[in-house]
Image (cartoon, rainbow, N blue to C red; front, side, top):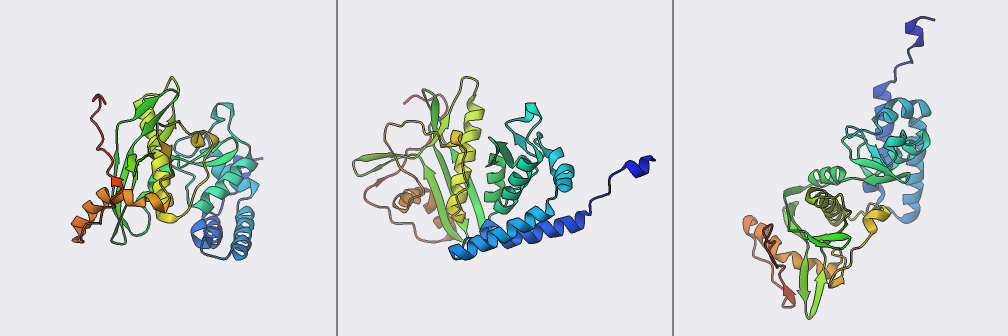
Length: 279
């Protein structure tokens, strides 16, 4: 048998791209989120069947399996063991594309056999969010506690010209201290860069949820909460959105709009301290 006969048949990239694109467009989370529950289920099931038909064993083996275990593609928690089998990679690839994440650029990891969206994925999703401009992120100094750290984080933006923002820090609401800093589990080998990287991933995920109304599932590790000195309140609730006024006013001023009225019960979060400053 000649070398030419031994070579596998080339994949029709255009046809494959067209089939996957059509399937994703029909059942992406952005597409179906506004539909009634029953219609959402029907359209999602139909789209997933189209995805599975397009992602044959041969396609997954030749297109996605080579990307496994590389930051150019996607990483897994079993890279040192050869990665995951084809069936798992196909399921994760399907979920990733339906959620709008890419299988390149380390936007996706496979952890415990499940889809996991990375910092790189959320950063891109936020940066490319339709109508979003003047996005600014700022991080405070991590407060390290036994077994973990609490990281203050801030964001402001304009969404279709309307100012918005998100503050994850300590604030005082009436007589109660509300602690919304980002909780990070820390082990002995983690340095400050690793702490800040994990915090940015969680914060970008929360920014994306605020913008899109979509919550992307976390792993058990990322759901581990570090105890705080105050009451942990989910910053995504409407009751706490007024705490973004300080940062939002900056964008209102730039846009020529009047500043937001500050609630009497709100005490602005303290500005982030410089590294090494005590207190």
